[in-house]
Image 1 (cartoon, helix red, strand yellow):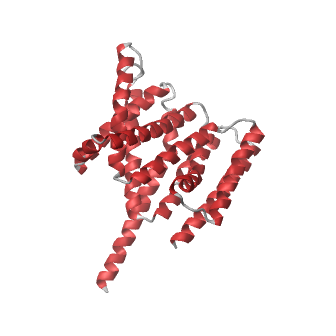
Image 2 (cartoon, rainbow, N blue to C red; image 1 turned 45 degrees about the vertical axis):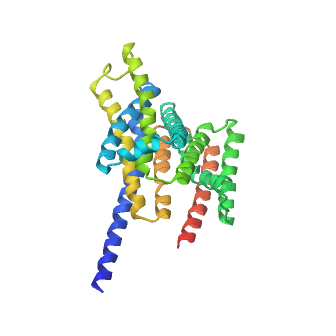
Length: 301
């Protein structure tokens, strides 16, 4: 009896810890636009390059701690693995680039829409590429999301390319990583390692021509650029710790914290326009996500 009680307490403690890790991860991702807004005076490519370089530095420490260096180089010696990681590197790099561009150009609201619809895009990709089958509730959720996007196109007369590009690049990234399996930190380390030479070349070229913000504006800018890598690595580690400790459906529900915080920042802090068209679209997406989440919990109950 005591053994059962102890196991139950340990499981409960692990669950609470997992939720704290998850809230930390998605909270950072939700509030990170504040960080990149503070770097609004730095060129987009330079921010992304610094993010890659300093994230590599942070991940290098993790790789040493986990003793995965040999595994990483073994994977890179396989040409098929190398080709796979080049594709995932392009996908995640494009996602980073567009996300920061959206923040700098006062399009955070559309960015939040992209991350709201990402789970539904992942469902569709699962049907197309993994031969998964949609339940009735999932079909309704996807249909509502489509209605929401079409409403935005028809009412505003513009294609929500930021939202859809963010949703599909991250959706395809998740699809490829799911099919490949493997350790998440090792995978991200390989992707960052492949992007690092390009980032270093870009920053080196800037430095040779006396350009770039690093070392030329002020200490605050330099510190923010260096810690861009830390801001990239920390939420990922927290996310991985959360995924190990709580059910996937719980992690799936917590992921809505990030776009919700993005949404609130865009509307309440940065004053981006929120029209009736936006209200209808977001309502469609929120209802779709409620149906999707209910379906996920019902399956795992």
